[in-house]
Image (cartoon, rainbow, N blue to C red; front, side, top):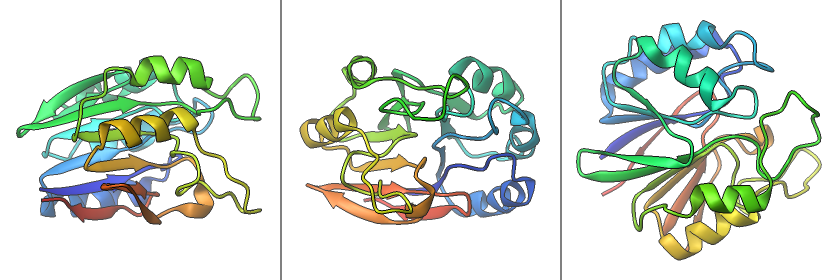
Amino acid sequence: MKYLCFSDLHCDTVAAEKLVAMAERVDVVIGAGDFARQHRGISDTLDILSKIEKPAVLVPGNGETAEELTAAAKGWNRATVLHGNGCSIKGIDFWGVGGGIPVTPFGDWSYDFDETQAAELLADCPHQGVLVVHSPPIDSVDHDSEGRIRGSQSIRSIVETRNPRLVVCGHIHSDWEKQVMIGNSLVLNAGPAGVIVEIQ
């Protein structure tokens, strides 16, 4: 199965157009949050991405809420928005949790969850599926520009216990397009340029 993975478009319409073209080469598209910029401009990218005809799984970032993303994606017939829930595509189980985890220092505008809330949203994540989260697991692809670790312990714990075949995240811009393994799970901080990953 080939996946086109991306995150953190932040209203970048040029990047969105490129993703539409790239999607023709894959089976499933995964968007790991931050389509908007502080709750503004979400339709700038969603209107373009809605041209993608492959099945897509989306989670909100910390720049838009799950409700805002669901409303903006209504015109994208093949897209499913996940936040604390899952779906199945072509026999693969997907689970999604969006938002900043743990709570970010950005203030009231940021759509954030603490580790306890995140653990509840992740609790029913299936074994060996695909996990889509905006925030990375702690000590993975989560090093900020000053080298500090910014990821989530609750996400890492669920990766270690449920062994998803693929974990797609974003949020930490300085680690865009980096990949690491946690056990048998490939963890990708996707970024806006898009990364194609093939998982058997």
